[in-house]
Length: 270
Image (tube, rainbow, N blue to C red; front, side, top):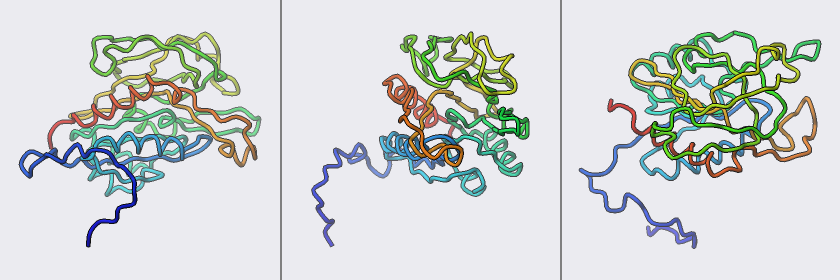
């Protein structure tokens, strides 16, 4: 049966000229997009569109880390989550997977554990030390969303080569760091976080974009990319009055996402 012509122009097929011997090897990707207080639908769709620029990347999508079979079978991993904490079994799978050569691009709130206490103050409990050691950091607090400048810490590294300092309006993450990080982008913060228990220790220089090696593999972490729609603070608030896109409004953020995906694809051959 001939394929149905629905009138949609999907553009040229970048693999159309590939032969059985020359075509790129399939890359199996797991995308985990889930959690609280963010427009997960928006972030998931944007990441899938970027992955769709690579026909050899075939992606499975989940809301949490608990499909251990999928994690073990993945070549690459991308996560955009907030307060999604893997079980210990999942953390151990991630540890072994990274050690054997897996590459993980972790975005924004992947390193967050949030609890709103009875006195109305947020805390970041240290309930997943293995997870945070793998990621290289844990979110502690952030000041109110406002413009800040991101600077380049290692301009010679391919992941940021040619990137100029830029201003973004986003959540400026104050991080508790773990292990030896290769910082690529950073920012200087002079404000304390608001509404967080540990805000007093927050001002100073914080990584924005960094690498954390693990065995044959490693993690690339990007703290940018807050997004929130009108319905994403439920049940705390029925309606959020603004549509927040933050760094997603900047071409440089999409450049960093694309560079990160290319870094994932350059993982060691298995």
